[in-house]
Image (cartoon, rainbow, N blue to C red; front, side, top):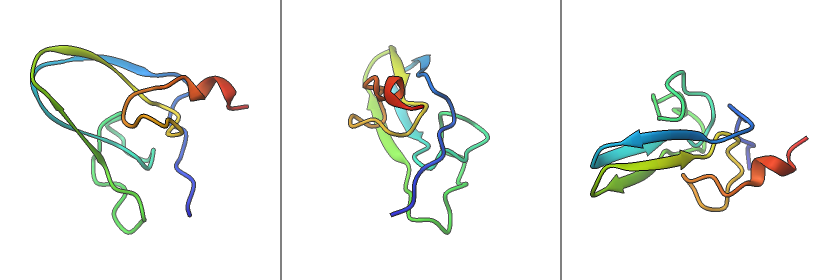
Length: 79
């Protein structure tokens, strides 16, 4: 299995309105933390996040979370 690129060793804390968003799982997107299709041709697929109200979301930047697309603090263990 391929390893995703660590785009940032901390979360992206973003306030979003209700709607559907797609988190970049490969780490290659220019539009971090959102998918821009850079994963095409790889085994990675974006992770859908549906929000029903305005919410601050801590998106994972390191791509190692066990709670995708949300940060779970795993970045603290990366060297």
